[in-house]
Amino acid sequence: MTRLAQTEGLTDIQREILSTVRDFVDKEILPVATELEHRDEYPTQIVEGLKELGVFGLMIPEEYGGLGESLLTYALTVEEIARGWMSVSGIINTHFIVAYMLKQHGTQEQKDYFLPKMAAGEIRGAFSMSEPALGSDVSAISSKGVRDDGGTSRSSEAESGGGYVLTGQKMWLTNGGSSTLVAVLCRTDEGHPEGTPPHKSMTTFLVEKEAGFGEVRPGLTIPGKIEKMGYKGVDTTELIMDGLRIPADRVLGGRTGRGFYHMMDGVEVGRVNVAARGCGVAQRAFELGVSYAQQRHTFGKPIAQHQAIQFKLAEMATKVEAAHAMMVNAARKKDSGQRNDLEAGMAKYLASEYCKEVVEDAFRIHGGYGFSKEYEIERLYREAPMLLIGEGTAEIQKMIIGRRLLEEYRIQA
Image (cartoon, rainbow, N blue to C red):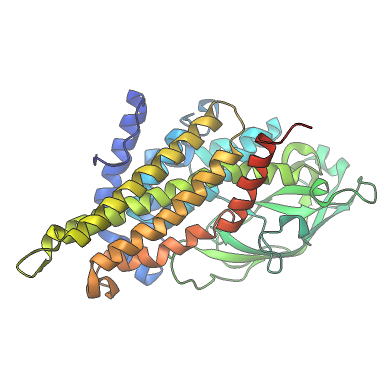
């Protein structure tokens, strides 16, 4: 383990997990990540290796075949994986958010059916809130789920309760093609009186599908991969629903109108994940920068001996440490059962901003070679901006932080 970003108070099991993952990253991810990324190739062998390590079931309870670990263990694992290749951590994160939502909010039947398969990596998860026209304004979604008493269903009990027909277009699904289960947020107005706030008339549907592109089940189309500047390898897609029939027993939690709360709970832990990704990418950028600075010579000595470069390294290392500490604090607060939206928002905001700055400083240390695709820092330079947007933009994080601070520091009349 490196000197930076150490975490005090870990158990022997946590240290063993992190050591195993770090070894896997060094041997199986770092040597091939840049080549796969340049080809925009899905990392099948890497994903299979993580599946064998049990990473897909890391936070799924032991009773469902998982490891039953904490959010902190998961976040530190993501930090290690992102240090190797951020795209791989995205594959894991979307799966984890759906598993977390099922664990926290699913019916017993839903937990029994999905979680063991998700722990084994047999079912891969994705979740879908965004739409082409709304950005961060989740309450403005237009995708709809309409009650259909003649809908198809999985069981006779569900048949008697009918189902739903989903229509709409979703955007920015990480794992959209490779996943086989998508948690989709739709508006469901049935049973809600006129004037009900938008966030109280939303429902999360558990949509099972085939992996791949095109029409992956009747009424559901995944058009293809969205071409991106970075964050390659992992597939990011649209999702189009046109008369998609979903049985009533695939409403998350068995009740409509709770979808917004389900998604926000999932995104809250997702923000800890994005903070962890920022920490991992920043660590790797520092490693590359400090190594190159000791090898590259100018004016008769390594550039690491120039004060200008030492200042950069000092600033980079401090940012890596600060982001890691905030991420760990946010994860531990959630694990303790406390509300952590303030801490998660702060950690995500700081880690993503610092990640961008550390990567840019490492890029500058590399000089002209940083612009070459032969050097790993070029890949990191294209990956870091995604963290400023994913799981809520930096501006959204500041809105969340500001509102929560006003709650905590409200002046008493």
